[in-house]
Image (cartoon, rainbow, N blue to C red; front, side, top):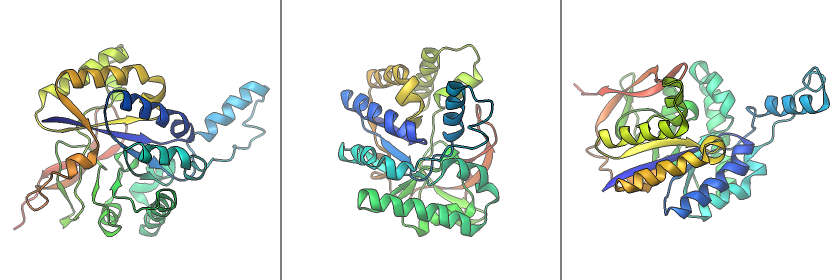
Length: 292
C-alpha cells in the first residue's frame, strides 16, 4: 500500500478560522485523512497585516498611530473550529504556542523559555480537547536539543519536526531521544515556486506528483491552512486527485506511526541545514547513528 500522510499546519487566526474548515470539507469529499497541527496561542504573525489593512482603509500614515492591533488568541477564539477537526475524524496535534516567537527565538532560547512555550501549548490543547497531545510538529521545522528532549519528556508518541526521508529515532549530540520523528519527505508547493521561478501552481503540483512517484515508500506532505486551505485550494485538490489516481492512500501521520516497529526503527543523527526553497537552517535527518 502506498501512502501519503497529509501534515496540515494551521499558523494564524484567519487560517484556522477559514482554512481549516475548508480543508476538512475538501478532504472529506475525497475520503482523505490528515493530521492538523495547531498553533494555540497569540497570532503575532497576522497583527501587522491587519494593522496595514486598516491603515489603508482609513488613510493613516502610521500603523494606527504607531500601535499594533492586539493579537487574537487562536486557541481561545477558534476552539470550536479546532474541535471540529477532531470530531470529523482527523488527528490533531501541537504546532506551537506562538509560531512567530518560536521561529524567531528557538535557536538561541534558554531552556526555561522552551519549557514555557511547549508547556503552554500542551495545557491549552488539553483544555480544548480534554485529552493530552500525542503528536508534535514544530513550526518551521525549527527545534533544538532541549526542545527535542521535551518531546520525550512531555509524552508525545511521535513528532514531525524535521525534513528527511523516512521515520527514525533522533540522536542529537550523541543523545538518543525516545520520541520517533516522522519527517516531511516532499517539498512544499511554495518551495517549488521559489526554486522554479515562472512555474504555475499546477506545474508545481505536477512536480510534487513526480517526486512522490520517483521515491519508494510512505511520504509526508506538509500543507498550510493559510495557503492550501485558502488561495491554493484548487491546486491541493489537483494533488489529491493525482495521488489517488496513482494508487496512494491519503492518511494521517498516526496511521504511519501505528505500523512502525519502534525496536527496529533506525537511529539517525540530527543536522541543521538549509532546505531548498527555504531561508535559514531547518532541522533535518542526518546520517545513521551507530553506537560503539
